[in-house]
Every structure is written in structure tokens, then in C-alpha cells.
Image 1 (cartoon, rainbow, N blue to C red):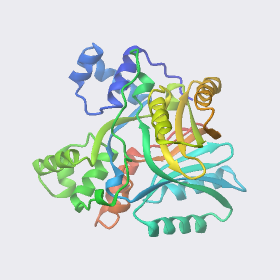
Image 2 (tube, rainbow, N blue to C red; image 1 turned 60 degrees about the vertical axis):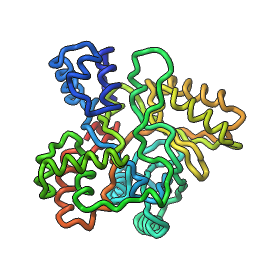
Image 3 (cartoon, helix red, strand yellow; image 1 turned 120 degrees about the vertical axis):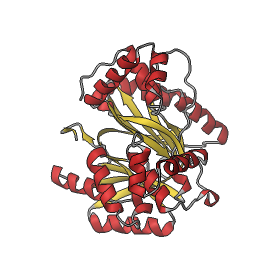
Image 4 (tube, rainbow, N blue to C red; image 1 turned 90 degrees about the vertical axis):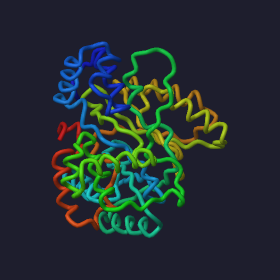
Length: 358
């Protein structure tokens, strides 16, 4: 676990750039009441200590895929080497968005996308061929309740405003788009490094800087790119991460709206989604330690005691893949393997609390 301590100015900077990663240094400096140079110094220090990671574009994946799934794995036998092999096999899939290592009832969690039921079947067959000793729980995402770091760094009082920039709104066939290869390369590149220059993107795609700028503008206005934000390494903030899986009974629309509002005001909840399956709500929670986490869960359970029938919690001790644009739809592009390899070397986001940040 990291030993970095953030002061009030650091917290304010983090609140701003994790919500809008393309704010200018002058804008951040004005809001934080520091000089431009002081803000630049603090951001660099946060990056050097692996608290603040790279800036990435958030892509609305419902524009490309029909559905998204969350899967929990349990294995009969395990060891550090077996665990590494399983993680690598999952992370290698071009449909997988996120892979995490868990402690508790389940060993690994992952989220992945599918264009149709054929993709889902292929992925399940892939899993069954790779792993002969697994059992799993498969759930369907319907929408996100929350996807924002900013409440973790709030220094002002009062209830937070709901954040936007979700990756998963309602899935619908009418929303699906089929961009050309140039747009796909631009989207993938921005999902890895949103600070890449238009000139670099132009060299990669063979179009002018101005043509790149116009394409990005169209993708933003069309709601394909929903925003930009810096990724963070929560563990290097001297915090822990927990995954919470809940089963709510009699979750009427009114009760669901109440739950969503409650989650959006939880400062330690940085992610939440509505699921269909054994569990129907997923939460990502940051906490100072297990006692702090227990207080958070007790408050949640007391607030919705009449509705919660299952509550399973796990420590997330490793994040082994985290991307906002899985490259499945880019795989047929000539030369894409080279592009992907270069970005993965520079911007792969992996950590394991037992081994440190990688």
C-alpha cells in the first residue's frame, strides 16, 4: 500500500482532473488558487508517485456493442503461478474491459462486451477451454449508477452533483454505429492517452491534423466520446479497494431511483452498476481500512435493510486490465497489432498489492 498523503490543494486538483482531464493548467490553477507552475509541479509529483496515471478518453461502449457482462470466477485449485496464467488469459481477450483479483468467495472478476449472443457463446467456450476447474457467476449489465472518482477528493461541503461520462447507458440496437478504421484508431488511441497530439494521430492514420481535429469533434458531439479523465491508483493513496455485490428484492423503479441517488452521494463509492443475475447491484468502494469499510457497508445495509437479501464483499488486491475501449472492433485493421503493442507497453494499467505497481 502506498504512503502518499494528499493535502487540500492536491485533493482539489485530483477532483478536477479526474472529472475533466483536459482542463488547462490555467483553469485548474484559477480554481485551486495556485500558480500555473505550482499546479504543473503538483500534477507531475502525483504522476511520479503513481497516484495519478495517464489521461484517457471515456467511450460510450453501448454505441458499438449490444450487451456487457460481469463475471465472477471461483477455482478449485490455485497458486500464484496458476493465478497469473488465468489473469493473463482473461486480459488477452480483446472483448475484456476490466480484470481484477479478489479475496474471498471468488478469485477473479472481469467485465466484457459482446456484440450478440454468438460473441457471448464464443467467450464462454474460450473460458471453458482455458480453465477446466472453474465455476462462475455471469451477470448482465443494464446501466451504470456511478462512474466517477471526484467525490473521493471533494473538499467542499454539501451533496455532490451526479457525475456524467458513463461508459454504459441503456443498450439499444438503434444506437449502434459503424465507424471507419480511422475513427476506430483515433478512439483506441485516445482511450490509452488522451494527450496524444493531433499530429501523432495524423501520422498513425494518414490524415491531416485538421482532419483529426474534426473527427474528434464529431465523436464528442455525437456522444461517442463522453469525456476525459485521469486514471488513479487508489492503493498509492494509502487506501484499499473493495468490491461489493448486492441482491435487492422488490427493487421497484421508485426504490431503484432512491438507491441510485444514495450511491451518487456516497463519497467512497467510485463505481456502481445495475446488473441482472444472482446479484443486481455492484459497487466499487475505497476505504482507509477494513473498519472504515465496515462502517460504509453498515450504513448502506441499515438504509436498505428491507430490500437487501444478499451482500458479499471482497478485497480487490489487484487490477490487471482497465480500458475504456477494448480493441475487439479494431482487430481486422491492417497494422493494428503494432499500434496496440506500442500503447500497451506505455500505458498498461496494472497493479497488485502483493507485488507493487507494474
